[in-house]
Image (cartoon, rainbow over all chains, first blue to last red; front, side):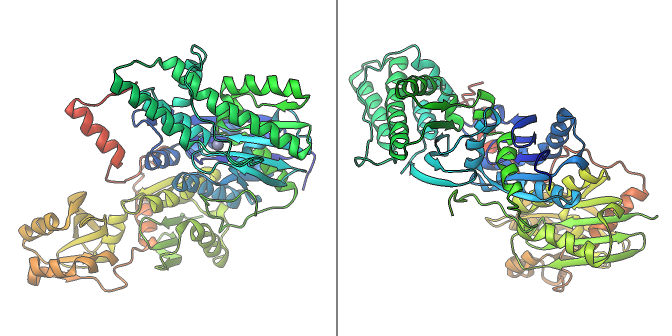
Length: 338
Length: 243
Ligand SMILES: [Zn+2]
């Protein structure tokens, strides 16, 4: 096993992005091809799992070929195949897993299963090496979690959402407001033009709790809109978006720094699709500066689902010999911590 | 060196892998365990090649069933076959899972109707005529209500052999509708054979047919429910395409 010069090919198909990447030494992205299906799913107002799976199959080898070509790497030079095993949409995950197994078998390479959230955290490692201990705030359409890491690959969960993920709340509220899919970026954009004048609840839960809850907030937005409609009042879209976003960000930011304090760490990591939210980035940067904490936020292209992050996390698993055999199956509910 | 085809079939609950060459089946694994194809397929391929002492590098083409059948099953088979073919830069061929099943009735004097359950009293099916060498389509492959299929079969007024494990679910109504003309496969004939699949692709190669492109379309026979609903809305003019 070559620790110095490892070339890992990563595959990620947990939702609606077909992505393949080649990463060198776990830190250098040689290629990161992302084939988004957003245009396919937009007309349905959300990701349709069966449609996503059909699309993944058609794109799979084409994307692998493109990723190797862009990296200028031939397949015989690869050291390992890393693939997202879960969590995610089972039908979508299966495509990546089937393809990764065939590649690993045909090229006689180790097969490395990767947890999707571990991948999101390691997206930061592609920019600046992770420094331990750290706390990571992982926010996406499927996840809202606070993770503590003492060293590479050692994850401890400090808190998680008890109902909707933050990104899911964004999408649902956006749909209710009649905004086009995907709703998260729309709300972020509108927020910048409005003022948080509507009083919406923040779910702090028990004192000291690092868990999240967004379903009550989502219902409050809907009730507010329904009430205004009954009374014939108009609600400013921008102000409503700003009020909703402020309510989500207040809790995310506060709990992230509570976790940082509780664990006494000096580094906070942001990860997941919602890290693209400009409001969240600004708020976290300000607070990190006030508190003297190092904040790491991945660049936009590494925030959303991509295979480079899977290859990055996969490289460390590869070095630790955490291989799977050819019976590897997709696991839509794969736990991060065993 | 002659042609060696690796054939992979996971379109239904049956898992089939075979290696065939001209005039010979070198090895074949068929199981009807209904275990997840995702876990079993790759180890089965690896195990068969190992037993046969054949390196993947010796395989000259890969053949796969591309449906109809279980959507997930089709995708696991096709993704695996496609990736193996791409990695080793060998041609890829696909066959219909119904035609592969119909091949089990190629010596039946009359018509052959393979059947795969499509749920809600519907089946993926087609009507084939056997000609001892193989089978040819009489009625194209489609997804049909069982009663519609049997009505069409009745009009043909010929002996018909029904094939597939799913036939047993409809045996009563088949016998009732077709009487004397209804014939049923033996348990062995009801399982699709990967060796037949490999043989069909081998024949294609001998005829000089072009292999598939990497982005070939799978044979689902049905659009997704989401797409069907969307199309319906567009037709009614109520669709609000946000594009
Ligand atoms: Zn993600």
